[in-house]
Amino acid sequence: MRNKLNFYDFSLPKLQIYLSDQGFKKFSATQAFEWVYQKGEKDFNNMSNLALKVREFLNDTFTFQLPTISQEHISEDGTIKLLVELKDGNLVETVLMRYNYGNVVCVTTQVGCNMGCRFCASGLLKKKRDLSAGEMLGQVLLINEILKNNNEAKLTTHVVLMGIGEPFDNFTNIIDFIDLLNNPKSLEIGARHITVSTCGLVPKIKEFADLKLQVKLAISLHAPTDEKRNQIMPINKAYPLKEVIAAVKYYEHKTNKRITYEYIMLKDFNDSLDDARDLARLIKGTNGFVNLIPYNPVDEHAFARSPRDRTYAFANALKKMGVQTTIRKEFGNDIDAACGQLRAKEEEKRGDID
Ligand code: SF4
Image (cartoon, rainbow, N blue to C red):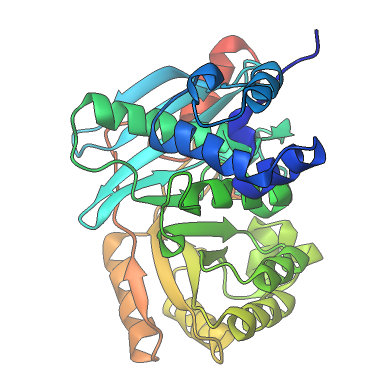
């Protein structure tokens, strides 16, 4: 018997194409979506408005596969961090952060990451594989189950693709995932409540811009010059800052949307007032704003967290130069906070890394 497909891997447009290729009406896909995502029905036999033939086909073809929770950590501030086990035993992390405007889920897009950023725990574990759209959606559904079981008023309201992995290195699947989040027939999370973060894969930034989705884009900049960025982000050798900024301008032109520049504050590396000046100069002429991120040190890397007063001085310097700047709020400090740490520890226990 052939392996069944995971229903959660299919966005509505993908299921419509799949069903019409089999000779069924596209509308059957919409009906199936309504049953699954709006009524919570997982048994195709009970989808009474679908023709018997369609039900039989769906039954033979699809299953509903969710990842499982391997560990659940709840912080004093309500942050929930999950270590999630995929069907092949691989582990990924998912975090729920509570902002006053909603529940934000940070989703992992790959098992490990090949980008090798020198400050990052995730980059220590090379990419094993991409996550499917259903595995990304599964992370959000697991968090929603927890929130439902707690009788919380709100489920996931925002999703950021900022967990382990480089989303644009898994382009097709993240586009399906975004559709699953955003489509009124599935989770119906507003496009402006979804953020994709990239370390700067220039051709993919342009491809993404051409899709003209209304989701937000964040660029992990983390250094104001090529000389510094080359030291911490190997991707900069392939796509130096000049090309990244040109891609940002292309994106702004195509979508009319603002970019967020993410900038991790690394002590004595990129946190001086000269760095602030270089950063303001670099992004001048784009419409983006800067989000400064307090660093969570990783044992294996030499970087330290920039002191609080220096972060504030850096932010103020940027603001004086006309750059809109925020400092990211921190969550879950009492649980393993740095992205990738939970998984790295578990893999170490299992003997997967030295
Ligand atoms: S910071 Fe992001 S892109 Fe860089 S290694 Fe970590 S997960 Fe990959």
